Image 1: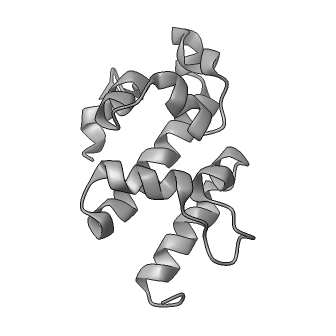
Image 2: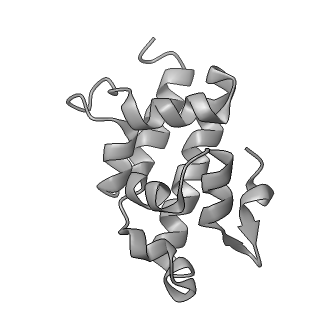
Image 3: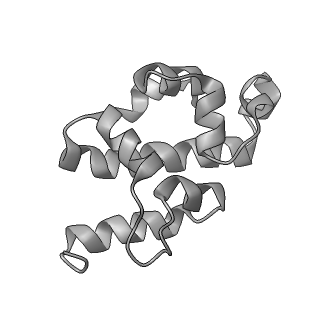
Length: 116
């Protein structure tokens, strides 16, 4: 997932992310913990919170995509695979709770062999 493919005028564009993941912008909003209206109004799309959550999603998917071979499989992992050490919670659930940094650290630890 090339980050530049998901931006327009210096901001992450939810519809481009949704198209790459073969889903809807509303679904993308839900998976990052935003209301569906957060991605419908231009002013809300440009808000710091919305842009941060979209960036976190793209960063996480970029980190795990090489391991799975495609963005779609990485997105399926993000939504459904329980992470060790997080009480069975998925990366999506952690991001929804504002804990994307913990997901990124977990992925780094797995890559380093800590949870292997």
